[in-house]
Length: 447
Image 1 (cartoon, rainbow, N blue to C red):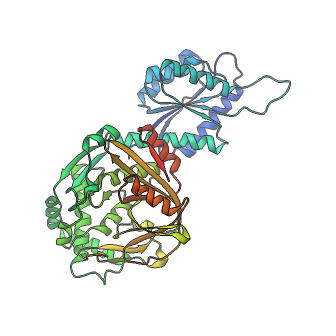
Image 2: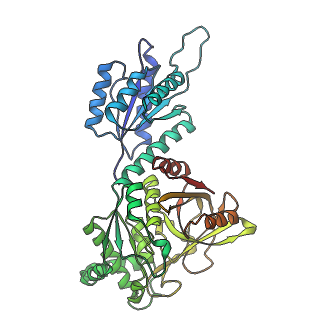
C-alpha cells in the first residue's frame, strides 16, 4: 500500500498574537504523529505568516511530493495563503478551524478562526478552486473524524489510481454479474487490468519445489486438522497457495480475481481456504471472477488495513432483524471465531477443493458493494452487529443484526440491481467510505 504524503501547516496573518498559533503548532504536530502513523506527514518548523515563509513551505512540500495539505488556523489568516497553496501546488486543501479559546470579557479575540475559514473558503470558491472545510479542533471527535475521513479518502484514491488488477481466468459459466467494463474502471478509479491464464497457475503449481510444498502442508496441518480432507486435497491446497503468491509477485498484481470453477474444481483445487489465508497476508484474490467485488475489497482494505470477507447474502431472519452472510469457505483465519472450532474441509457444496467451515467473529461490521450501473459506479453501504453465533451450515458464516430493517435492505438491493456479493469489514468505516466515494464521484445508497 502506498502512503499518503500529507502537508500540515499552521497559519496566521498580520499582527495577531503568536502564542496561541505557536501552541497549536505543537499540539497539532503531536496529534498528527499519534493519529497519522500510516501516512508521511510533512510539518514546517514554524507557524506560517509571511509570503517568504509560505513560499519556502510550498517548495518543501512540493519536494516531498505532498498529496494533500491540511491548513490549521493558528489565528486569523488572509486569503493569500490558501490561494497560493492551491494555485502553486494543485493539490487538495483541507481548511481546519479549531474552536475559539475561552473568551475573556475585557480581552481581545485571539484567533477568529471560523470567520477566517469562511472568508478563505469564499475566496477559493470565487477563484474556482475546490477545498474542504472542517470546524472543531483536536479535542472535538466530529472535527478530527472528518479530517481523518478526508485523509483516508485521499489515501484510497491514491492507491486505487495505481492499482494493478490481475485476472486469473475470466468469469464462471453463466455469471453475468461478474462481467466488467475495463474503461469504466480506468475512468473511475485509475486502476489497470491484465490477464494471466489459469494454465499458467496450474503450470506453476506443478513445478514447485516438493520440499516447499511439504513445509506448507505441515504448517496447515499444525493449525487445522486436515484429516477430513479427501486424499490429495491438502497437497493441492499448498501448491495453489504457493503458486498464487509467486504469480502475483511475478506479474506485479496488487490484487486479482480468480475463475474458481469449474476448471479448478475439475482438478480438485477449489481455492476457498487458499483465498482466506492469502487475505490475512495482505494478498487479495477475489473469487468467482467478480472484479467489482474485488475493487470494493481493496477500497475497504486501503481505508482500514484489515482483512475483509467477500460473501453472499443468503437469508433474512425477520424476527431477529438478522441477515445471514455466507460463502463457500474463503474467510480469512483472523476473522474466524475460534471457540467454534474452525475446520479445513472439502468445498461445502460440490467438494473438489479446500474451504474453511467456520463461524466468524462478533463485532461491529460495515457492509459495502461497488457496482457499475451502465457506466456509473454506485456504492451500497450498510452496517450492523455480527453476532456471537455458530454456523448452521457448511462454509463460512456471519449473522449480522442490521441497523435498519433487514428485509427492506435485501429487497432494496435487489430492486436497485446490486449483485449478490457484498464485502464485510469489521469496524465502523461508513464515514471513510462515504468520503472516498465522494472524492471519486460515486453516489452512495445507504441502507
